[in-house]
Image (cartoon, protein in one colour):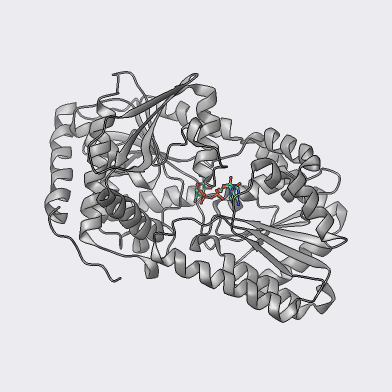
Length: 486
Ligand code: ADQ
């Protein structure tokens, strides 16, 4: 289950979210049921829409405009997303959004309940659905339920600024398995549990809350490594890639590919590129920076503001350093096909993946997978991307440090072939060992493992759960229309 479900007939355009790309691959292999929001708004209650494609059924439901405003654009994207990305300055707390989040989760749980069979394994994805298991448990479901968080989990002092923090945290204890991208995220989470005295450690990765044992672990997500490599090789004949190559003449290409999101550090990256041109004039007219960035979440005001900031930074750099025959920054606001993307990565001497904070960042992995073994490019990677835990042979940078990032760009551009090959080979080894299929299999295997140390009978569990959720509804009250700053 995930918020958006890319029903095949609707997915004419390429998916811009890592979640969609990864899960499609996983489900194709295992078969199953994919449930979530249709992406449509409807003011009347409509039946679930189910589409069967081969081994997979996609079931989606519509939301009302109020649901979308409160649950999705509100609590999920203006509270959970910024808090999990350590951006308390961008966090908006509104009680109607909080109530909406729990209300919509409960309604998804009710719909899901009509589909669930007793031996079904439920795998819930991402921050939109944290309390889902708690609602299902309250309805009496004892299925194995796992949750995977695709974004970071911040340390206690940051996470605890979340509205309904304790309810959100305790919602996670209702799963059998809670997975994070990195060990750091998992540890941040378990420290939160300890700080709130909400769970106690039973063994290495097992915890107990309200008589229920659950497991917490790091499951770093991967990509379809071989498929990506193959697409990159075949992209030679792709017209977009050819046009790009011809237009580059003999210049080096630096590439950045991200959804337009403040967590991705796009403005800071272009600033670092400017700084590099300022400090290393010999690089002018020798290198072009291509930033491909489809817009996302334009309904959230912070994103609109950021669109302007990034465009301004790109324009400023081009105005300052550009010439009649050279545009230093090419900034493009559209999604491109996966083959084109793979071909562009392969054409780029440097891949810049410098988020200020990121759960994993699949672009980093895609860039590495696309390179030529005989002449690979260099990955400049933020220390604050989850991918840095695995891809530690990249040039790791602090994206807040503009000058150091500028230096890393120059170092990448000038890196000797032998060093490039060594670094690339070390990263490829990790990518081959942990593909998206491994990730999926590892999570599902861990979820299937029954704890040997079941502590309490179900009766006690039900009683504890009863007290957790209704208090959320009462506390955040559905009737008030809420306060908004803008
Ligand atoms: P995202 O924030 O979407 O995902 P990321 O992991 O980088 O971030 O995935 C982006 C995906 O979209 C990549 O597969 C990329 O190729 C694709 N994409 C980006 N720009 C594109 C463009 N212009 N055209 C076409 N495709 C484009 C969330 C979390 C991440 C986590 C993933 C997966 O925020 O931290 O890595 O989920 O768990």
